[in-house]
Amino acid sequence: MEIRVNNIVYNPAGYASQWQHLAIRGPGKPSAGSNIPAPAPTDVNLQIRGNLIWNGPPNHPLGVGESGEDCPPSNPTCNATQLRAQNVINTFEPKLADPARYNFAPAKGSNIFTVATHTIPDFVWSDAPGRPSVPAGNLSNRVPVDCAGNPRTLSGPPGAYTQ
Image 1 (spheres, rainbow, N blue to C red):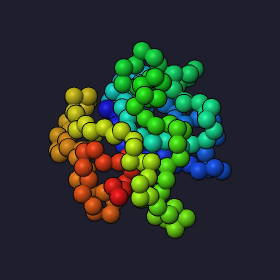
Image 2: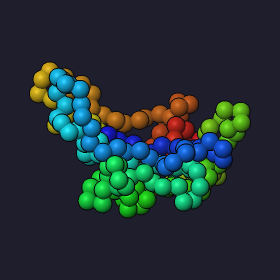
Image 3: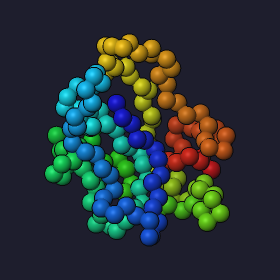
Image 4: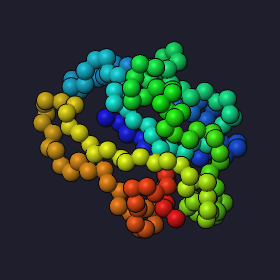
């Protein structure tokens, strides 16, 4: 399971990606002996939610469901309708404290605080290969503090900072 939840992707004018917001390629051919099934789809259980994306012009292609791309309309966890509904994509430019001086925290009263975020699911090992065996370890994806060490709540803003 791939998870991309509660991030800020900010590419201001002059720094946008050239062709599209996302690149989720179709099934690939894994290396021989890798224990990865062939073909290897890239969008099985892919979850992209709660992200604030500012990147390129308003008509910038999303980059999913087109020819050669994965996340078709039939995929329940990754399709164009779901991505647009559960993420804020080119709706508003994030207001940051002082990015010119490398302060990427949300500005006081910032529009970043209006973005609906999602609980980050824990890892699962149901898709791990049978060999070699993989120890389960800690499967929690809980993020208790932000980049500055401030407590993070489940309903906090997207990005690395809570304030």
